[in-house]
Length: 178
Image (cartoon, rainbow, N blue to C red):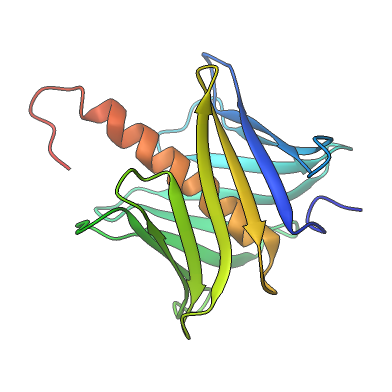
């Protein structure tokens, strides 16, 4: 099976001082791929690779007032964009737009920002993301319940991780206000 042929994933952050990188595991805890961040990137750029090293997708963040992450397939074609709501009311909220800008998914996080439900425009649960923090590293369990390109859900997970971690780092700077 290829990296994008599963309905359940576990993403583990690899410890690195230089760049953000993650391993992608299946339900049997077998490594099926990796996500490698660019060495120097203020916007958030990541490549998704299978176990052979082939790039199966990528994320490129856009610098703007509203965090946005373009999601590209293995042919470098834009397939979706993940965005974050500017002001949170109760928990974090993100959404995904197709390449034409039409909203196709909404991701709502709980108050702690560790549990997300992803629903389609009809309100049907499509996927869930659950963050576990253990041994000083982040682990995400992803369950896909309905037909959707797994790359979109994997990329949404990394987009959320990137934004929430960068936001927490910036909040340590006196005077920073989201």
